[in-house]
Amino acid sequence: MPFIAAAAGVGFLSLMDAFMKEAALATGTYTATVLRSLFGAAIIAPFFLAQRKGWPTRSVMKLHIERGIISAFMALSFFFALTKLPLAEAIAISFVAPLIALYLARIMLGEVIQRKAIFASILGFAGTIVIISGRLGREEVSDDVLMGLGALTFSALLYAYNFVVIRKQSQLAGPVEIATFHSGVGGAVLLLLAPFFGTIPETGALWAIAAAGALTVMGAMAIAWAYARAEAQALVPIEYTGFLWASVLGWAFFKEPVTLPTIAGTALIVTGCWIAARGPRERLAATAS
Image (tube, rainbow, N blue to C red; front, top):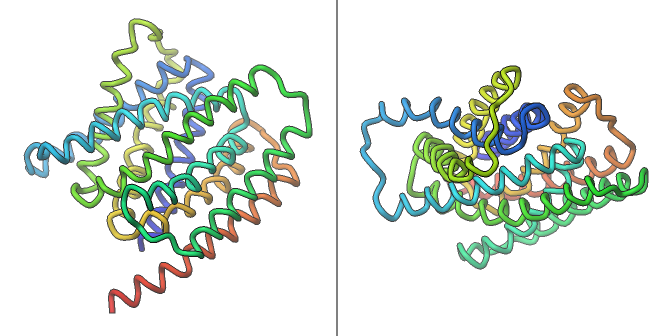
């Protein structure tokens, strides 16, 4: 079940990325990103208040704030990259984050890295390299592409650290609480930049931003539930299924073609996911029995 929940969470967030690319192109990256967080907080906050659990403890609140700050700038840089690169290729390049996260989980959480998890992540990363090579070999590298790659690199580093914080956070708080503070803190942090980057949103983009806010909440809850029940190193390779979603959504939303290198890279990514999921699932079943 943790793997199913993680895969569903990735699917929700991939669809959210498609809506956010559309909104960012229409009304600007900053405005779309901050409104997404605020919409998400408005959607999930009533459910958190209805639980009547009270305010989080100081230690838990520190984790909520830490992840909110990380997520705010991770999202801002990633959505900027989406305006410069095709959806599937942007998500594929961001897959360097799970590879980094495996080793951060070892350093910060003390998780023992299994050989299968390392091999799975290497396969996934190799698939990403195949996709990038196909992209760069098709056309001249423009300034927009370079800006997109730079933003993705920054976002991927934050994303890797985000995985580790999720693992700690999910041990101390429920999915509804995590989703509430994830959107709320992120939105509050981004609002501080409004005097410098804020613009009046395009009316037509608001529905896409609202949908993205709802999908963010659903994805955050699903992933938080999964990370509370399985190790980060086991779930991280499931992130690679996001490329499958991105390929379909990029074509459906923006008519972005799926090339032969994309298909070859996807095959490597899916193989890595299967290898990673098989071993941990057997261990979880043995533990449950």
